[in-house]
Length: 201
Image 1 (cartoon, rainbow, N blue to C red):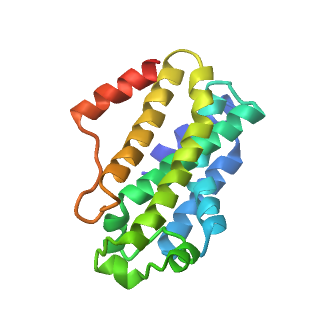
Image 2 (spheres, rainbow, N blue to C red):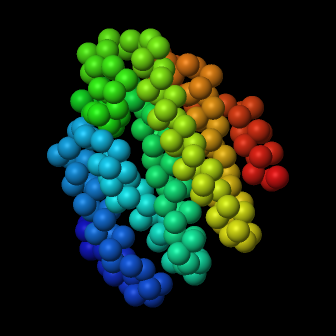
Image 3 (tube, rainbow, N blue to C red):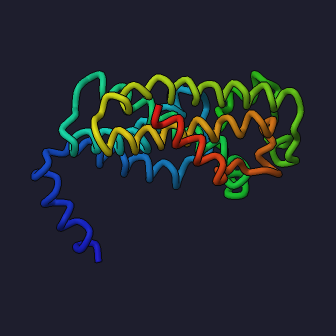
């Protein structure tokens, strides 16, 4: 079974000059996900994202022969921003798995305990913390958006849809006042119409 996966991959990597480090990073992130359920600070959180999310964007740039330092930096911003968006969207789901991606130092800084998370406590401290986390993700997605406009054709358009989808989820988090415990933010048909319009601009 593994041969059916790795044999084609072994042919694809040299054919497209894909960097092995990206695959090593992904495996490292998978291993960490099994053993580590807390992040001490932003440094730890962003390091995890750099191995769990960013390699995907970097591999895509190699496949589309669009590797430049600027493209890589903006791809990293998009991938990390999307990963964080997913984390904040799924806080309640991750908590049920005994996992929380909110940095421990920020929980302490904003006066939010893990007991408060367990109680699904939505107060001003929680809202201030989540507002900061959502803004961090929004800043990253916005920083990477020029890449989606620079890449030509279908890949550029699809990337714009993905980024605008992430930004819309963040808007939904704002609108829900960060009550992710009772209302998981999702995209409805009306959201996709707005996302399409924004991607076409």
